[in-house]
Amino acid sequence: ETSSGRPLTDPNLESALREAGHDVHAVTTTGDLERALGSGTYDVVLANITDAPDLERVQAVTERNTIVLPAVYLIAPANQQTKQQAKAEVSKAVKEFSIVLEVPGRPGHYCALVDKAMELKLKRAQAAARRP
Image 1 (cartoon, rainbow, N blue to C red):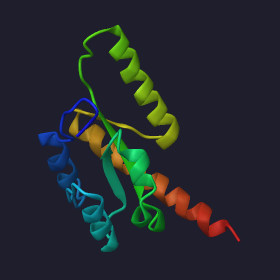
Image 2 (cartoon, rainbow, N blue to C red):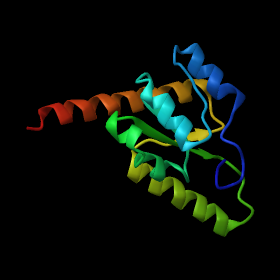
Image 3 (cartoon, rainbow, N blue to C red):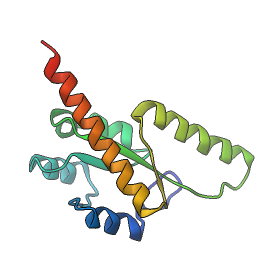
């Protein structure tokens, strides 16, 4: 769930990624995530924006150079203060992760962001390969 208490789901999210040829597997615990990543077939972890920093430190994520793609739910803030807090949360995530997925969104936007995450994974792998 996101910090707003809403589940990290959008009916179009999973279907858009599957239609684009991505294998989608939903997990709810760190143990489930580690088992899924242990299969070696997942490159991107789509996570609640509040969980993303912790997930980046999960051993299975770091060992496999998996990209954590934080998601934020677009909600109508109750007042100006919560609106500013939401903007600050998104800005911080963009600085930390480079890419943030906004939910709900257009199916094509979801796929484009996953593609960007895959490019970032490739760049990290190339940079790691150049290190002595």
